[in-house]
Image (cartoon, rainbow, N blue to C red):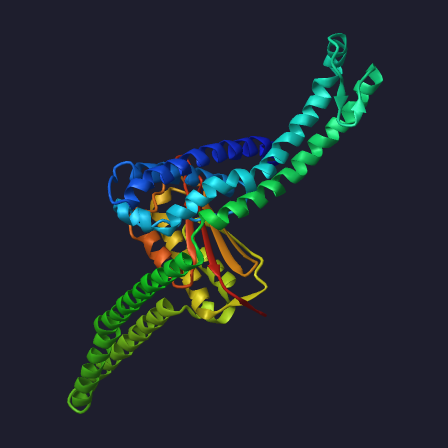
Length: 405
């Protein structure tokens, strides 16, 4: 409801940005002329920066209207590169066309509630003064020449307010989508960005796999392998003592049995770290519930998953939640953690919310960066909202398909 009531203000802001966009786009075109002629270059970059500032504001307003518009710009370069960059001229085209293509939507979203408010709160009180001054009173198709006619304008005005607040968000969303077609990355730029993302995530995945293999090799070498070597040596020594000292041989065999048990436990722990058995047997939700039981905090887990994602996705989300719970236990000072799993429109999401002190910085430490790298392999994302004083909310999303049970 608050979003609907704020629709007229959002529409007014969009109209103001249209005016600013025209001026900024015109400045870019004027400053580009000397650049094309091979002279100048000092005015053009600031003009482009001003236009991009206006375009960024338009993207934020589009986000308020429910349309996410990513920034399409390359890293900051020199004036010549800005002149050749397609995103610069797409912004210019938006600046010139937005007042023509988009202002009507904002005008309706703003004008209908305002005109309705005029009919409800102003028209009944000014029609007599206007009539005495010789003016003509009309509210839409209603000719206001009496108190009854003025009162009849009130329900019409209320209907216009309700209608404007109802269709206003839809109108602004249409406008935001149109603006996003120019202010967002072009198809070519989106494909290039996608390729860069795939290269980065592939490199990160390869590095992570190599590090994981090194960890497994180290754990095997220093743990189970060392115990098995000691076990073999103990058995050989016991074999030589069978005839000479049976009691010592039996003691060595007991020690060997204990070593074999510990080696087996270490191997199980190692396998559990690679892919937990509960995750393979019971699925993601039950595996996270098992994590909750082992956590020192009170953890509530809810899930509406009706099936199972692919095993690699399950593993990525499981270990991401495991890392988040470990971070919360060490740093957040929280007492309660709520974990919610959902699947909507081809996207698996997981919310981890704690009642700690907040103030979490995603750039501080490697834990959250490791989670982000783990999810990025599957085009997943992590969003952290942690205002000072809390609560901290971490939102994970991974596009995937699920198989029904």
